[in-house]
Image 1: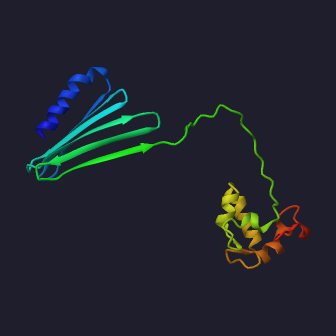
Image 2: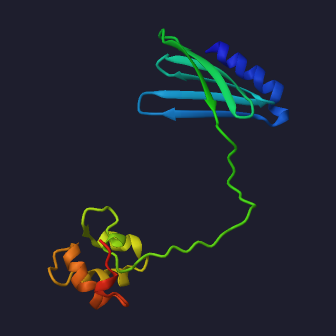
Image 3: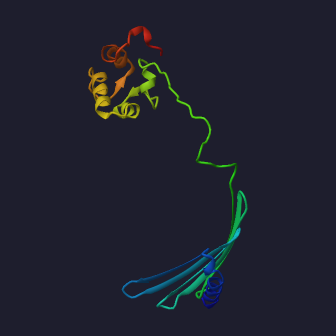
Length: 186
């Protein structure tokens, strides 16, 4: 733990003025245990350095040191850790970002209109299980009241919470404007 604290103090004295250093601390108290956590991280150019340490009122102490390096689409790093109970280890890793990512689009925008046959059963049967449920109608129509009324009208022959293809063929021409028997394509 003392090595970690020395490294933390050294890094903080070198870099706090550059405002690229973050120091964290946490004190946790339970009924019979007090734990202190200290951490520091610093960014210097493409390199990142971090260290942390902890100690408890029961004598458990430990810490970790890490380093990372970032390039355009690639980042790699590693860390080591240990405590006074003999737990030791290390980690190595890397990240690779493929392609250029951007959330801002400065190009041309298009208005897209999708034309569907509103008299086609398959338009309403989203999960393709050969029945239409009220949830599928809700997904298609944002206005829930109108969607529910449409579903009730289509389900009026069996009133079982499902609209089959036969029910749809019978009810759609009666409840959906401009639907006729000659418009069905199954």
